[in-house]
Amino acid sequence: MARSTARKRALNTLYEADEKGQEILSLLAERIDHPGAQTPLPEYAIEIIRGVEEHRRTIDSALNQFSQLWKVRRMAVVDRNILRIATWEIKYNPEVPSKVAIDEALSLAKTLSDAESPSFIHGVLSAIDDHKDEIEEIVIPVAEPESPEPESPEPESPESESPESEGPEQEHTEQAPSDPDVREGADDEGERDEHNSAPVAELKSEEDRVSDDGAGIDSEAGEQAETSADSTDVAIEERSDTEE
Image (cartoon, rainbow, N blue to C red; front, side):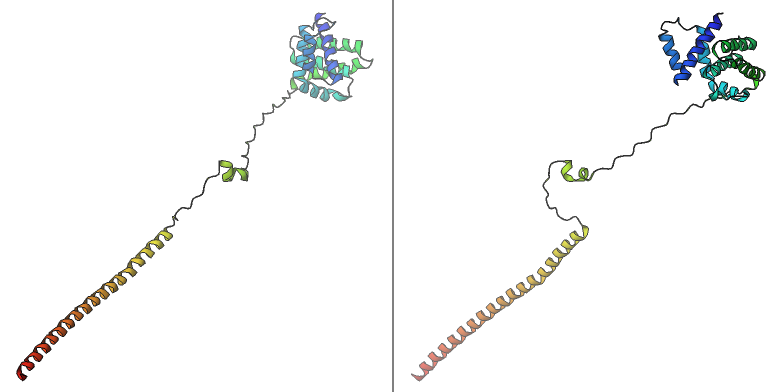
């Protein structure tokens, strides 16, 4: 009797989540924390709800495979959740015999569903019981978290490259050109000046030598003139003495 109550409470929670389109485990957490006027959910009801949610893809796939009339999405809400509970017990709970699971499902269908539901549910569950070992588990792939893309470096703005943005304005001083060709040109020009200055110095020394020679000539001429004058004076004096 206790498990029958737990199945009905589990059916109420699964039905409500299905009708609202709410996640099953989210609604289950609310019912555990806030049972309201009802008594707390039995442990077996919580086990059923969590088991159905964990294997829901496999359960719904089996129901679609062995249902001769309706697919899961077209079944009545109460019928598909009765089938989900019984399929979970047949496939995943070895403590409950398959016959007991089917009888409990039929009892719920007779109480809560229409007149045709019990025969439909019985046919589907009987086929699942016969092939339960052939039902393959459908594993939901776990999506790997995407790795963040490396951030591309932002392009530097032209302002950051300008000298003004780097600091206060600096005084610009002209520097001597560091080009080797320019330095060599300056050296060549200096060598040309030294080369040109050498002939000029030689010319000046030649002029000085000429001037010195001229001065020597003038002095010699003066001496000769003085000697001639003296000779002339002597000759005049001698002639004067002879005439007397």
